[in-house]
Each structure stands twice: as C-alpha cells, then as structure tokens.
Amino acid sequence: MKLNQRETTLLILTLATILLGGTWYIVKDKMAAFEAMKQEKIQLQRNIDFSLQTIKRQKQWVERLNKLQSKLRIFSTTQHSVAPQLVRQIKSYALRHGVTIINTTPRKEKTIGDLYELGINCSWEGSQKQLVDFLFELQKNNIRYDVRDLKIKAKGKNTGQLSGNMVVYCAFIRKNIEEKTK
Image (cartoon, rainbow, N blue to C red):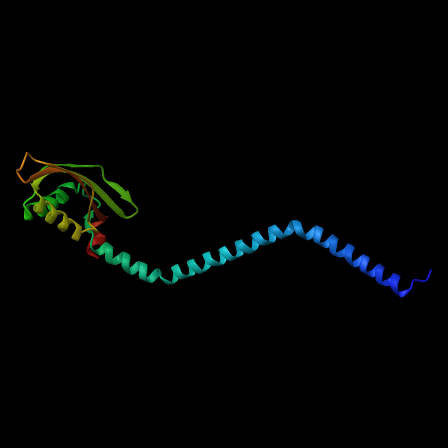
C-alpha cells in the first residue's frame, strides 16, 4: 500500500495530536503537585536564608545576652531564699520616692533556663507623683524588675493619696560560689 503525501501528512498530524493529548492527560494531574513543590522550594529557600542570617548574627546575640546578664543580680545556688534581699531593694526604691510599702508577700520562684524569676506582691500607699517616680525607678531597672499587675485606688476623698497593690517580678541568676569568683 502506497500513501501519498496528503495521507502521510494527515497520519503524522493525527499521531502528533494523539501524542500531545496523551502527554497532556498524563501531565495535567501532576502540574498541581509540581506547582506545590515549586512553592515549597521557594519557602524552604526563604527559611534557609533567614537561618543563615540568624547564624551570622549569633555573635551579636551572644554579646547582647552577656550584656543583659551582667545587669542581673547573682545569688548563690546554696542560698535558700533570695526574697529578703529583693524585698529590701524594692523597699529602698519605694522609700527613696516616698512610697510606703505596707506588706510584701513573695511568690514561688520560677526557673526559666538559667534565669530565675520571683514575684513579690506589694501593698503600698503614696501620692500620684511618688508612685510615678517609684515606678519610673523600677522601669530604669527593667531587666531586673517588671511590674505586671498594678491596682490603684484613692485612699479617702480629696486626700490626694493613693493605695493599692502591685506584683513586682524580679529576675536574677543563681551560680555556684566558685563560678562567681572566677
């Protein structure tokens, strides 16, 4: 059987159409997966770039951490309770600014890695200016002290005096005596 040029061209076009249609039928289901992999690759590259930048900044982070840790008070690991010293420091700040600390109740000490935190519930009295100055003093030492809960009420009518309650969280480090002297 002999095919002329027109039949050969139609045969080639038909085979090409069938081949392209079959390829499309097989590939169309995989295109969504390919796009998802492409997006995942972009996201992974972003994560790698971010991680590399973080690693490059490690020295800066360590320097900053050391600088902040140097501002924290250091207590011995053998010392049972640090609450008296911390209460004494808070009371000295309050006295300096005219705020009267009536009652203090230490809470349970919490450990967060190498950092220790102790909440001290303080009942106080003073004027608005005295309280603001006292809180400002605590804020200057914000790496050591953090007031997270503050309740204020007027102490009588037209007296200008306030009273209330606050919880001062104190951050500190515990180390062995040998480490402290090194």
